[in-house]
Image (cartoon, rainbow, N blue to C red; front, side, top):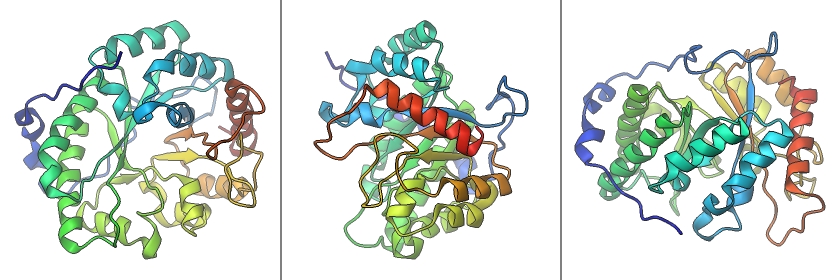
Length: 309
């Protein structure tokens, strides 16, 4: 049974937010936030995003099948779970997810969070929701929060960009107080139209870091290797997905036509040392040819072979 979200007082979110209204320094990827991996010389941990489990569920909430997520990830060698914000709104989220984390030995790595941050009228509700989600993520040991600012039908106006910039500053301040690294997670709308949305945000929140989805970059006509080179050290997180030559998503990484060799070279050149997440996705109506856990294993093995992580 799903639980209704509970929103804490907005005062807690706003407390200390004035610290974020000035210049925002880049958040350091310290050992406290990103402990060194056990493998000698390895810097990048590879987790998985829950989207492929969420897509078929009502309200994109994979909570009812969350045990399968942790079980599949354990089988495949995935090193952490990236949740969606809706998974953390349930009253019992911390207890349930904490139990699964302990049972399967797979940590909660972080969460993705999306809202219409450009709409100033929605800010009070978003602020309360973000504090709820980030607070529970911290309790579960999460390290990162991927932020999506919301899409509009037309390119965002200066006022809309101002609104999302103001809210992002408050969210960054909250994450810093909670020891979580925030980053901008893109779909296509942030990076098309000559990166109008992304550049508008960076002009307003110059210290914010990036967690690009490399496949959405491709779908927006941007070569991931070029994007990585362009933004360099600002990138602290990457989402990995593959697609076939015709544009449909492949069942697993390594079964499509994405130029992961070029991506690997660019990541190496910037000495990338953040976190990575495989995000499987399938076209509508797609029929699996194998259990999901096998696609995760194929994908995890491919990342190790091709990227060295």
